[in-house]
Length: 496
Ligand code: ADP
Ligand code: GLC
Image (cartoon, rainbow, N blue to C red):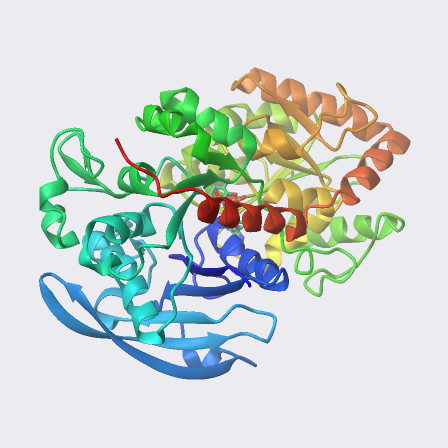
């Protein structure tokens, strides 16, 4: 019998996207469905999601249900969609008052989190049960992701919402420990049935505030995160666990690291329709033409001998801009050119805009979210830089390897698990990695990469090896399937 899973996520590609979670929400259920899992997805219907734009997708029913919210029973509905027969059925939770907005978590007009983010994700978590009730379908596993759906384990075990789901289990996947879903203690009244569980040291409480992620970490039957190294790091120190590391350590025998995959159809240089020149490991000359196209597109002069270093990223502290920004001049002297695409922290955005004005031949920055340019950078750049302070998994280093764009990374989290340093392991090297979080080490490692780049034969050998790595979802999906079985074969978690 296929395992029945409700996959509850706050973002899903291509409909709502802020970062890597969306890629996972689209690709993993698809791979699991192929592996004969009865998997269904629940996600909010945000304002930018227009049902009439679901090209080729069958618009199914509108399922009606009701939910206990702020001590009232309110009606809600779910719009059923299935992209194609190999996709998992997706249920878009409709509640315009909470989701019909321009942004996902942050109001683009003020750059602030929406003040009612607690309500928005309380409703999503509660709605998981309403949807299943309305469908008359009992998932064996509620698969939750990050703080936005981390209250589900609480509802499952501690409230009347969980009645009838005693045999179901909850799995919480941690994509990033830095975002807790931390709210004022008054939020406890809005959760529904949570007041008796709010006291110092309780699962919901964190320094007199309500912490959604902590609730899930304490109560979910099983936990996992998106790379084996990150699974170890988050148990080891505050800088990775953000104050929740002792809980994770306590739960280590139910906490597993599974490296994400990438969508290898979407990210395939041989078939990618978004790049001007398609290529394989055997036709790397075509890659140079993409480099020319990239330089033209971002306004840099093209030079075969000067490497283009790409970066596509949320411009935030996590991604290591703190060690990159201060040494840009030294990077340009290597010599190298840098192409950045991203949005985020206005201070870094400003620094980058200034640097682009000062070094127009060396540096190009595009502030914004641009899928086409992202593909062109992957195809056209020679190297890809990810000096992350921490990185739960990271997808771009894997996409880069697939495109023969060698990653230069800090060996943390999923970067450590997916990139092998070509100097320390010449036979297996697929990129360049350093451990110490400093501008000096970053520069030194870029210097090593540049040396390798000058040796064309060696560079191409590393490129070919990187391009042949298998980062598809098949392997990771099989591990998730095993994890679902692990959830079912073990007794429910008994919190202390
Ligand atoms: P994170 O989830 O921490 O942001 P990941 O590496 O897991 O990092 O995933 C980032 C995803 O978002 C990748 O698919 C990347 O290409 C994409 N991305 C990030 N910023 C941009 C941008 N400005 N334009 C286009 N794609 C972007
Ligand atoms: C988070 C992490 C990133 C990871 C992604 C998907 O956004 O920052 O490293 O790849 O989730 O799991």
